[in-house]
Length: 314
Image (tube, rainbow, N blue to C red; front, side):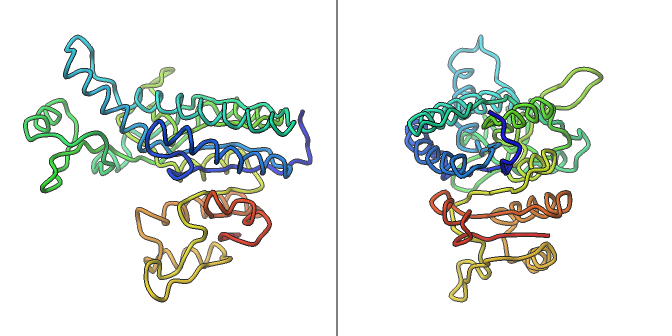
């Protein structure tokens, strides 16, 4: 049942909340479901997005190997692999969360929306792809990929990997459906793995050979829904200054100006915490009275109570 007094929260799940293999995922989502159910019991309406790095790579490897063994099968495009991963990760989260809620006597409905996200075909990321996917290849296999128009990168001593672009998200194509479900008080799982990247061509949506970063879509989703809070779950309980050094210390709170300054100083690492901080800043510029919490799955309850995690405000 819809409750206008509910606080609205976008939760972005990282790899640790899902595991790296199918069996790990089954176990991990049960733990994740308990944390998400705690948030719903606390009065939050949840819109949930999630990573899919290990899952989409596994699917890409499987489909590539299928093509190698059975030549009648055509290779699966990255957009199709993304759709597959969205479906099966969403399926596991949805069923685990539903079961956890029902075991508590909570009848909140949970649904998964297969989500497409448009990107600019002229995004600079397409000219410098860097996201590694799939299996290690031989030089011969890598040359074949290049002939097909794909990009590869050599890792000395290991082999070659396919790399794809990570363009910025422009528009969440199913956003109106997501808004309707959220307004009805449902827990909505969407934009998994950043969403299926597509290019708008007249009235058609054409799958793009790319991956949209989970943190970027989390900030976009929170902004579009104008939720009260954005929670980004990662492998550490807080954001740290001097991470990994003897002077490492957690940040309990920072504003957008401070976050931008720390980022400029290189405090967050371009592939680790920095994308999360960038997503937080973009959301808070759209929703100045919002709040961002960055913490780990184990610290969700404490973070909501203000006893753990890093809070970012405008």
